[in-house]
View 1 (cartoon, rainbow, N blue to C red):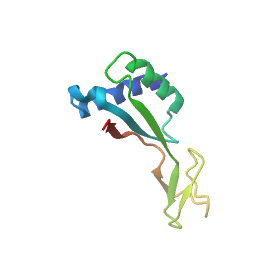
View 2 (tube, rainbow, N blue to C red):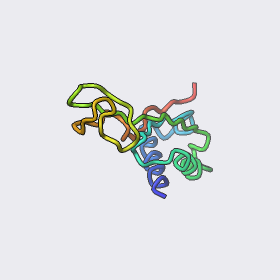
View 3 (cartoon, one colour):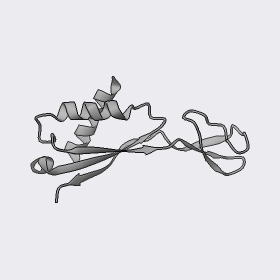
View 4 (tube, helix red, strand yellow):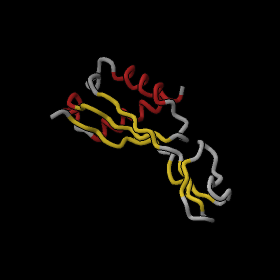
Length: 114
C-alpha cells in the first residue's frame, strides 16, 4: 500500500509548513489528487487518520479535491476530459496531445483553526 508512504510524506509537509506550536491548530489539509496519480483517496485518508492518531494532528481533517484527466490536442488546439490514461484527442482523434491535468498529488492548503 503506497498510500501509507504518501501519507507520511504529507504529514512531513504539514510539519515543515506549520510551526510546531501550531500543529494542534491545524483544522484541515486540502489535497489535490489527479485521476492519473495512481492514488486511492479512501486508502490515503485511512492512512492519514491512522498515522496521526494520538498525535498533535489527530483532530485535523482532510479534504480531497479530485483533478480530472485532461489533455490538450496539439492538432486541433482543444482540451478534452478523457478516461485516465487515454491521450488521444476525443474531438479529432489525434495522438499529438499533452497532459494538462490529472497527474497531480499535492498539498493545496493547510488551514488553521480560527
